[in-house]
Image (cartoon, rainbow, N blue to C red; front, side, top):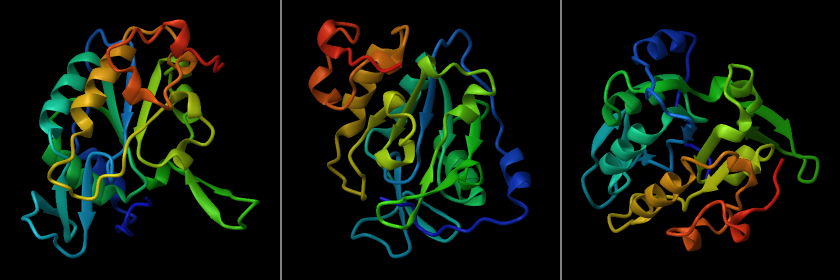
Length: 216
């Protein structure tokens, strides 16, 4: 699902600078997390249960088990956030859900690439991981988590797709996802691991023959 039309502005770089960034010492993998419908759900009108907080006027609902998930990921990975939403909104959300100084980076819609879909004639927003490669992160060591596969149309080998989160209080995706991502933490080349049916692979060796799909 596309992110809601959250505002961006010419001053967004100043807001991004207000978010302290850091890294996890000794981490060998970069974990790139989406925000909307992956970690949180934001909407203009409230659901039938209280929101966790407000950001740029939106009611924000945290995915269940989010705090435990992020704590575990920050122990094992260098973690960055890349959202297709505006930077002011993203900075406000990140400040509420991440400990200060723990993110390697926060990227917003300004870092995304708009491409033409020649089949439908429309346009789509893509997160091009080559932009991270040029900053020193090898593609074989980048794991991206997103609810929209089309955002990583050029990098399917790096993507772990999660179910869209729309504010359900009984959602149980993150504990299972945490187990799977930890399995990938020591894999030499994450692009060589079949991840499309990852829920059925939790608890198995990620480098086993059944898990490899030959991504270059």
